[in-house]
Length: 178
Image (tube, rainbow, N blue to C red; front, side, top):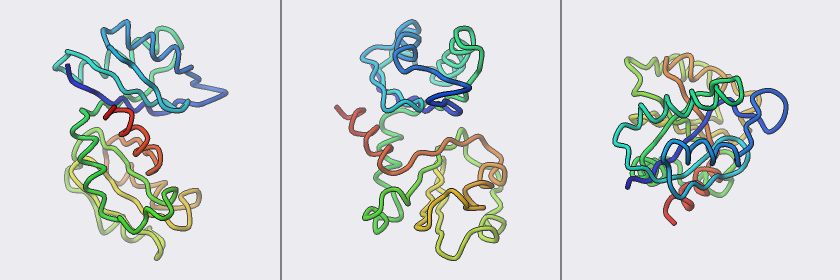
């Protein structure tokens, strides 16, 4: 069985698009997932599955959430090895002293012709980024709340992305690795 990490987009703790993690566990188990564990209330799950078609499983999960809750979140599924590689290849190790300043944007696909000049033109002088195959690393020592780069990166890259801060990424990785 393969270990997968599901990162859901657009899940809120309260208000619209609310999905209790207990319900996410039940939905995943209904799709055949085993050993389902969640991390915080914003749509992070680690589980095992014998399914070799992660894209199909991602679509099924989103559809099941729609059936039960009336909204269809974006679901990005990563194999544990891919997630571990994203952690290991962090290009900003000096940012670890302030883990809230480091974010990883997990991409649904590798961007075709990413406009790096455009990304550079909207970033603050204190911000840094690195685009790997399917991960956008973003170091924002002044925070992401007012960052034009954080707000515009997905549109500029042209592929769906879901972002997690370094602390969350490491916690999810620890769950995945047992």
